[in-house]
Image (tube, rainbow, N blue to C red; front, side):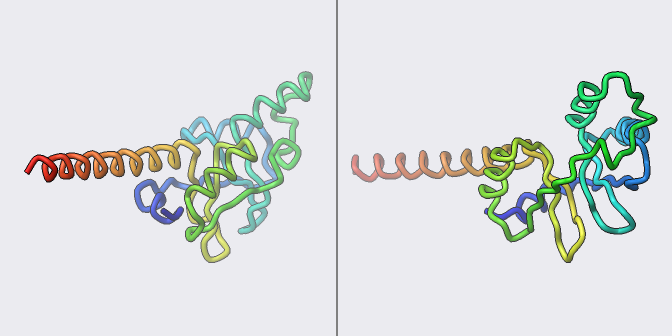
Length: 149
């Protein structure tokens, strides 16, 4: 199974925010759009990601600093980990687990086409395993029926 298979079932809107905004602007936008992550962009170029986890990290790191005074470029995670549609979904999931991230932008034609979450990948994987289990149960039943004949 490839990332593109997961995308076909769950195409998530990619919410972006300019890098010149503040952490408060990002938090307000995330709340309004019911998004748990925003891709931070400079022009059309993605330069990072701002997630709910970044909100907590910034609050702890800079307790006495207001979010409206915090440039998004300082608050975001700059190391953007991405997948491509032809990547194996299991590899994407392993990459997310290893990097301890919950959001994975998918890059297609040099732009971010969609955003996947670890939940999207796990649900898809469980669905595949359930289908495989059902197939194996039918196979075993057929074998038992054949043995009784």
